[in-house]
Structures are given as C-alpha cells and as structure tokens.
Image 1 (cartoon, rainbow, N blue to C red):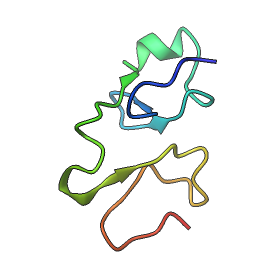
Image 2 (cartoon, rainbow, N blue to C red):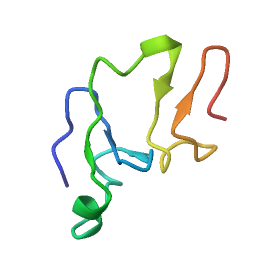
Image 3 (cartoon, helix red, strand yellow):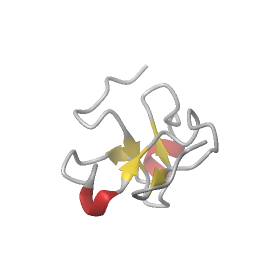
Image 4 (cartoon, helix red, strand yellow):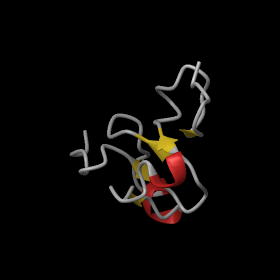
Length: 69
C-alpha cells in the first residue's frame, strides 16, 4: 500500500482520483501520470475530491450541494 499524501488522495492526468488502496501499480501508474492530489486543490471552488473506487456512486468529486450517494 502506498503512503497517503497530505490530501489523502492521488489523481491521474486522465482525471481519475484514488486513495492509496486503489491507485494502480506500475506500469499504469507512470503511463497515466499519477501524482498526489495537491492539498490546495481539495475544497477549491467548493469541490470535494473522493476516491472514485470508494465512493458509493463511483464519482471522483462532488460540487457544493451534491452528494456522492
């Protein structure tokens, strides 16, 4: 298991968001450009990022007033 970054999440160049338990292994990690989600991005413009694999609805983020259910 990968250590969690300060934000708790990682994201890829393609926009996939995952927690340390769900990030892909090599070679997919490198090919898709996975990096830690910047802590400053979490909550920016009211958007909350989620691990789309843990999210009940399979989504990577919610906007203000939305739910991941």
